[in-house]
Image 1 (tube, rainbow over the protein chains, first blue to last red):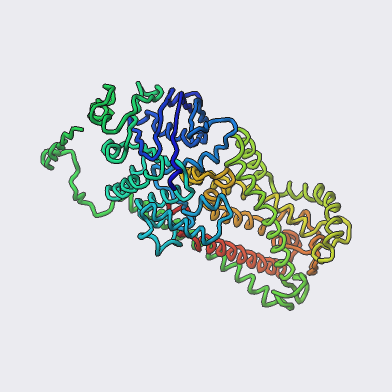
Image 2 (image 1 turned 135 degrees about the vertical axis):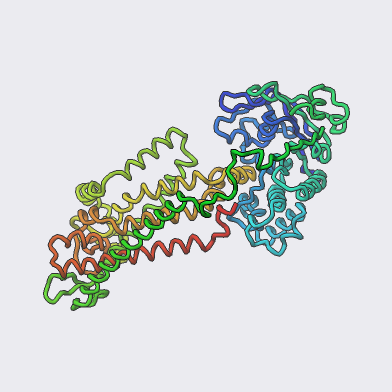
Length: 261
Length: 335
């Protein structure tokens, strides 16, 4: 598991919804084995940007991307790249927990592996247990592996989704406001988990909660938009400590100190 | 972040707000409108039940008279001579013919309908999907007598080639034996019924597939699923109970279809192995064919057969509900 994390190098990335330019000319580097948080007001394009990192943006009707996303030395938007393969490499956890309702806990975790096919039962059992342990969920669900995943609590469901995402051993884990639908205790459990996961993965997390960004991330990127209808832009990215204590751009300081947004 | 505590203004006391009605309305616990509406809706409900019960009682009574007068066995006799004296009739051939043609229609229609529905909901570009949906809706609006005429004038003469091929390779099974001639047979009826139930099965399935939650489809995509895998992991399991309901709607239509079957089928009261050769009959077709010339006893006999069809439809619907309920805890509705 040690050599899976990869560096992401984004340059000149612009994303559209049909004619609307949602984010404009974003360049940044995301370091491997670290947590990078995206913060910014609603509509600033941080989720859109996140979704360009695993080619999920183009799934939306009208979604289109220009620019380059290098995963180590491979351009995810290269012409020979299969978006399906990209999404196997760059996993994603969503805002609302979304376990497959027709599947059991076990089947949910195994779902991604089954896609690739050819897994023996014993090997599958191993991966399911390892992933659930990795998501700090094993102890809570080991007696109900074959019960529906939708029967778990919201926080457990989100950890199930994380287990499902890491079961396919991605190199990068994207999290789109993973705690926004959870209570404080479940949020804490997820934050602890993120801290553990970063030793193995490159993690990018979008959050509305600045305290959360300060708690979990090593680096923080601040996004902003000039006005509604204008494209979102990256204002700055820096060490989290620096962003929250002494940011180099005034807008960042205004946002962090609660003067807007 | 600054936290300015917001203090709500103090609630005004009732004396200060004379325009507000007091809590005690002083005219009974319920309002007149509520009572009138409750009475009306309860009355309509009761009326419906009474009318239904009256119809059922009348039909059962007439059916009972016919079955008592029946010289043959109502369930096993291969004959329908209800106007004779004494009357001899049985529904065995009708049960067989109805079941075979309807099940065949389901087997042929449901896979195609699910395919069309998925194409419309998940594969086709928006404009193509809209056009195709419109065409399917048009199919549903064609009157069944038109299907019947098309079946008799086009389908029947064009199927004999296919049936000869069946006879050549599958004739040894007996089921696919074909003696030649115009195939006004149960198999032809099954094909025609399949076309007729295609729109309803397609439309209901399409609506269900469209409602498959985006969150689960994105979850599958994010795991590296191809489009077909997304459908298999999140759309089909979600739509499963809907497709079953759609199939049952289609089956209900196939079971009760009258004019199209009566126009195409060349009926006979024999039970034959071959589905390709003319012969057999269905409940609805038998009623349509016999009702006009029937005497009192003949009508009562047909009513008895109609009641059996009604029971079969009830059973089919009950079975469908059981299938849907069995895996309820895994249904998408819980999410």
